[in-house]
Image (tube, rainbow, N blue to C red; front, side, top):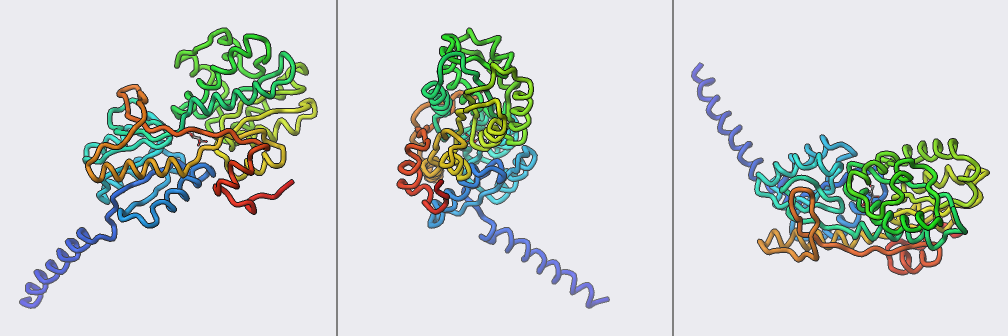
Length: 365
Ligand code: BGC
C-alpha cells in the first residue's frame, strides 16, 4: 500500500515531464505552412516541387499539406498547422468562399495569411495575394483562337473552370473581352452554350452573367467532366457546328480531355484548343500536335514571390506588392506575375532552354 502511494506521484512526474518535453520539442514546430488544393493535377505537383526546391536551404521550417479537393480536409490542414505554431500561412483554396472559415481561425491565432494563386473570397482574413495575371491568361487563350481562326462563322466551343474558383471568372472575363467582338463580327459562332448566345451582344459581363455561362460550360476543373461535356456537345451538334472548330479550354488537364473527344469525331476536320499551366503531359500534346497552345505560368516566380512575402512578414516588415484585388470584402494587396504563351513554335525556347523542363522529359515527334 505504502509503495503504491509513493509510486503514483513518481509516475505523475514522469508523465508531466513527457508532456512538457514533447510540447517544447522543436520537432513539430513549423513557421510557414503551405496548403495546396490537390495532388491529382500536375499543376499543383509543380508548385509542391518548386516550393520544396526553394525551401531546401531556408532557415525557417515549413510544411506543405494537400487538401485533396476537399474544403473539410483543407480546414483540418490549416488547424493542424495552427497547432504547430505557424506564423505565416500560404494557401491556395480549394473553394474560394469555403476557405474563409479556415483562414479566419488562422487570423484569430495571429497568423498572416497569403492567398496563393486563387483568391480567398468574402472574408477580411486574407492579408496578401500572390498570383499570375489571370485576366491576361484568358485574353491570351482567346487571342490564340482569334489569330488561328479560319474564315467566317467558325464554330466556337466554350469551356470554363470551377465556379468555386475566383480564377475561373477572371480567365473567362479575359477571354470574353477578346472573343465577344469576334463573335459580334461573325468570325465565330458559339456552338455549345445557350447562355453565352443570349449574352453575345454584351461586351462586358456582370459577375451574375458570367456565372450563367460558367455554370453551363464548367468543367469543375475535372478532366472527366470536361470529357463528358465535350461528348454531349458533339453528339448534339449539327454538321454546321463541326468542320474546323475553335475551343476555349480553361487549362491543360481539361484541354487534353476535350481535345481527345474532338480528335475522335470524324466530322471535326481540325480544331484549335487552348490550355494553361504547361503541364508536362500537355507539352507532349503540343509537341505531338494534339493541343494547340498552353499558357505557361512560371511557378518558380510565384513560389519565390510568396516566400519573399512570408519572410518579410516573419521579420515584421511590409511585403512588396504591385496592386490590389478586391475579394468581395476587402481590397487585398497583391503581387502579380505575367504569363507566356507557348505553342509548337516556342516550346523549346520557353520551356526547355529556360531550364523549366529537361529535353528528355519529352519524346520528339
Ligand atoms: C489555377 C490554374 C489551374 C486550375 C485548376 C486555377 O485556379 O490558376 O493554374 O489549372 O486552378 O487547378
